[in-house]
Image 1 (cartoon, rainbow, N blue to C red):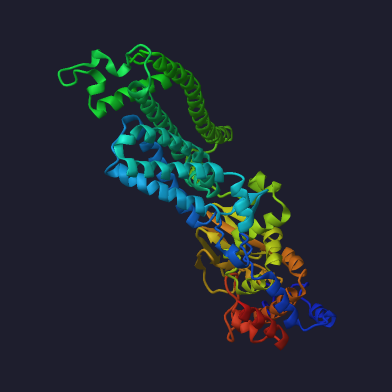
Image 2: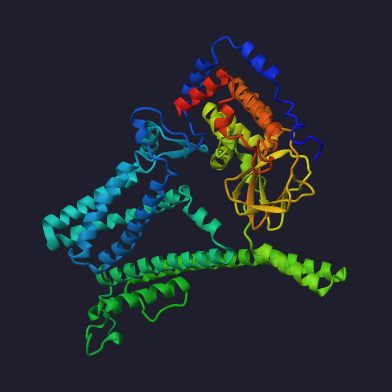
Amino acid sequence: LPIGWPTVLSARSCLSKADVTEIRMSGTDSAQSTLVAHISSASFSDGGSPSPAWGWNRLAINPDSKFMFLYTLLSSTVLGLDLLLLPYALAWNVDFEGIVFVFACVTPAFWTIDLCLNFLIGYYREGEIILDLKCIARAYCLSWLAPDATVVLCDWASLALQLSHGASDSRSLKVLRFLKLGRWLRIADILRVIRTAKVFAVLAESAPVGYRLVARIVSLFGCVFWICHFMACFWFAIGTSAPSDTGCRWTDDRSYASKHWPGGIDDASFEYQYLSAFHWAVGQVSLAGSAIQPTNSWELGAGVASMMFGFLFGSMLVSMMSASMMDYHMMQKDRISKLRMLRRYLSDNKVSAHTAVHVQKQVEQRLKVKERLNEGDVAALQLLSTSLRSQLCFEIQRPHISRLPVFAIFIDMDVKLMQRVCAEAVTSLNMRPKDDLFAPSSIARCAHVLVGGAMVYLQSPDTSPVIEETSTDITPGQWLAEATLWVEWTHVGRAEARDTCQVLSIDSEALAACLRMNCHVWEVAIEYGMRFHERVTMAVPPQAQWPSDLEVPMTSLCDIVVSMDRRTQQMIGVVAIAR
């Protein structure tokens, strides 16, 4: 450290009293009045998803909210039960009682509420979220209102007929209930909502590659099961209810007769009937065939159509499963290739067995760790507009940078400016265990905040004003080298990652360039920086402890604000009252 440290440390060249004097001389109105007007016009936007400002628009529901996430799961569950029970009830002519009666009463009410709720759910247009009720209603009326209303009306009409006419009107009831099959139109809508709520994206990102492959295969088999279920119910309904030009039906086949079921399948138990029809459906999808043969024109037509569908669906299923397996193997191939090249490198350079094993073990462990993606790793972000990209960066980084009190004040003063700061002055770093964030005696260019993971700060008597070596644990949310933003700082310790860490780094020069764009924010930043510099130079024992990269004595927000001039204190007070 230089002689006289830290007294000889200088403030950042951009933090000049002349700038403050120039700002104050150029202002025609009082700083407080101008700042209040600016904050009022900004309406304290949080920089996240836009929200409606006045009137009924406050009732609009953000499609990315937690409520929509839970509601989508609920509607998907109801839809799945509806799609399972409906074919069964139609094919077997189930009596209107018990669980069927309860479900028949609940589903119309649920989908009626869903229809009304769709007038409040926002949507995306050209990448921008729309939360205006008039626009939402117009978009819904031009898209899903007609099919949704038709399905809901069929639900209520079916329920009303059953309650008023009973089982004697079962034929007209069945015709009307077939209209409920229009509910399949809701599948695309539900999946679109799920994609909007990022359910699949979150699951895909959070699960390892192997689990993703298993989940994909399970979902494919679930789809196959539902299709076979629907075909089985359809086949049984044709066998029992469709016209027959030969006087025969597949359910009359006497080869299935026994002392318990003398009439064949038609007299068999429900379990046997369903499994027989399901066996036939699986045979059509897999093109393996079935022992059950069609006996009339309706059954022949259904069999031909099912075989054609099975051929197309089976081919698609095989290709999807093959693609999933290939994707899994390609991801494993990259890992295996890296390890093979490492072993070759170690062998070519005749590295000792002890060192080679240590190197390979560390590489294998680090390859298993899932790294967080930085902004530069996502090419699709280049397609975003500058404003939306700044908004995205701000939403991601705000919870962390706002832990520094002065940044929280800047956010309250000008959200748009801080969005630009996050886009231009803040970068994200991913660190592995044993990596150094900075080394002692190096010139500091950035301040840092730990987002996730664990680090340790080490000081040695050779490079720091300490008597013996010290180590301090660093936890998420803690700032490092904050003095870099206001002082020409030199690191007096070493920050080392204990495990996989994510760190946000704020470049001091880029930060100053952004803050200059708002005279009020820049005035507060200069005054804050000058007071911070004074406290750094006074941090000398016995008056105070030596400053470090983790802490500078007497630099809490309250300590600095009470020493500012009255004008700056009033500006900060305006922000505090407005908050």
